[in-house]
Length: 215
Image (cartoon, rainbow, N blue to C red):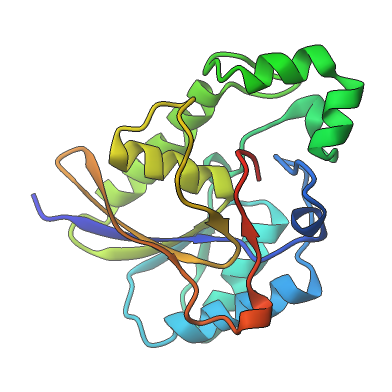
């Protein structure tokens, strides 16, 4: 079976990214820098003949995808399964605020138990099943072709783990970068990492990097 190429893009920066607040499925907006990053992505992909453009339906991803659509002429197809992991009561808080307000819940979350659900949130295992299932379905729909998917940091984290056989609780050795290009191949039910964290389309002052476990 021929391999499908997915160009998986993390959305542009938001104010909560810069403040290191847990976003989850809270519908935050792109910052001014995030909008500039999205335009740079659009220019980078303008000459690439990909077959379809998919996006999470959260504003920060959808608006990033719309900038790409403006430069490439591709219509944006949204899918809620591409949303970030739900973090319930943690959303909108920094790590220090979470530890102070919800010490027990934070300890359980930090334990790495893939089946633990933050109140109002979802487990790492359930989230992975949701987003990887969606991405596998997209890859199968465009077998042998190339598509662009605009999504979130922990969706990329899940893909990285799927491609490397990395357990949920194991540290990820690479950062999550806003507006980065990440290429994955999918064939015979398996994921392969081709390229990670390409930001050559961004100026030095436009780069925002996150090295933690949430986005």
